Length: 213
View 1 (cartoon, rainbow, N blue to C red):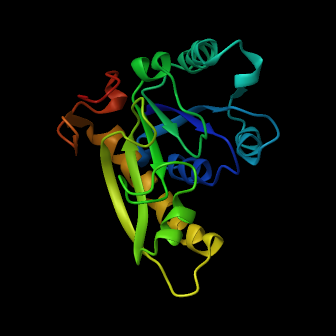
View 2 (view 1 turned 60 degrees about the vertical axis):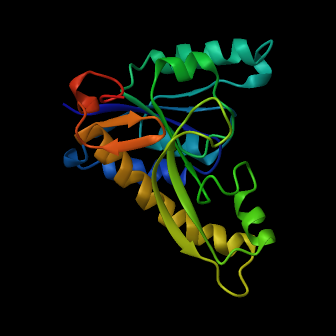
């Protein structure tokens, strides 16, 4: 059995494409069953539609408040019965309905807990660090505060600007996300406090969302 993934995007969908490419191999252990977004007209949705994947948009501005948006997003995700939700460049904070129903994995272009938020690469450069990187983590109610699953360092080079550094981070980020999601769906995972252990849980494809979470 393959695990069912719903992938959430807000922009170009490069992480989505990496997951789509990986899922084309049955050995990966997962299939993308839908792609969701918080806005129209983005390349991430175009990638999904070119691949004939179901796609949906749930805009915050179409709802009376964040609670109503959270409920609507939960309903659209739940319709696809995911084992795992992947936030792949999704630029909205998920609410309690979504987070209470599904395990959610996110990527962040810094070595958390350093430089959380929307401007992590810019903030790292401004601080003058010599090493930054990317983090794959479970999502909780905070902003980039969920338990860390995996991290990889990226050196800051002399002369780097935000664009050049972010591009190198994204290259590493795509590989790390694919590796982590594949291991989670094939081998399961468990969480003790803030410590995430890959393997040893029930694989997501077994029909137990959370894989031992």
